[in-house]
Length: 346
Image 1: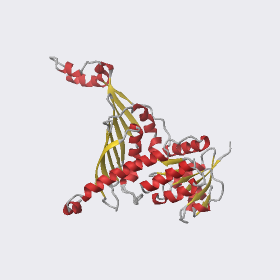
Image 2: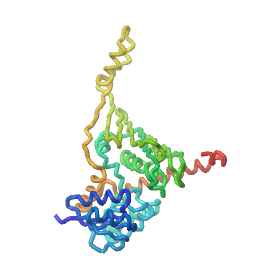
Image 3: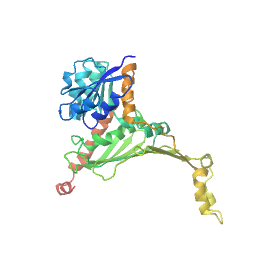
Image 4: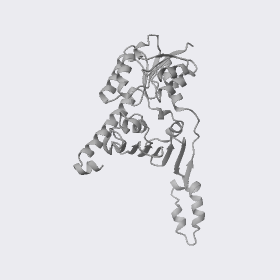
């Protein structure tokens, strides 16, 4: 099996990790790293045993694929350069700077019958992989994605920076059900773009999702709850833990602990100890250790070799982008609708 010849475009915070992983991946040759910064690009390339170029257009060698980890505003320009040449692309999230640019990337990929994958890496988080099979027919979803201010991704809002991960996961859960209504609040705090946003999504089948994202907090948090008719699944993406709470057959078939409580001389303390096990089940599915970014890159390699779709293709990235824009539009509408004094205070 011939090694796939790949290149990484952008050697910043994420690009250097893409390059590092690809340089050690079996069946892959990292042949180049493209980055315009001479203080960064050569160092990353040399550390991975790859050639450095300061312009992606100088990559004249035959490539089997590229990973784009450049600033979001450059995704369309760089992505188009390779897609038009039939070279598969993995582009970091968000897929592009705006919806028209995202649509154009998807159009180019389809027009040239070329793989376009979007880096929604949480789909490959081991905790999500363990939880996802338990989350059929969600009725309510709650997600919090909070982080300190890192001075990265300040060219986009927190919706495109952080919340877009949860938007992708929610859309994966609900499938093709349309979003009936979007309600959002939020705004800038430290930068020009929104740093905190709270959103509620109401789907046509009645499912509701409440999402919070912020990048001004002392402690990081990446958690989700998925409620179905009979079960609640909790996921901690950072700690990589999953818990599933459900009703036992004893409770499902009509026996209630409340009936025992009402009996004369009921032993409340003993009943408390019996709730979990007798009436409520608590399961902790096994989370198989692994690196999410490595799994994402392995999926890209698989898609190139087999010609099949990646787990997160261009249309999935576009769907998350479309929903992100609806959230931002509503948040900005509510903010601009405030009286001037209240808006200034906010």
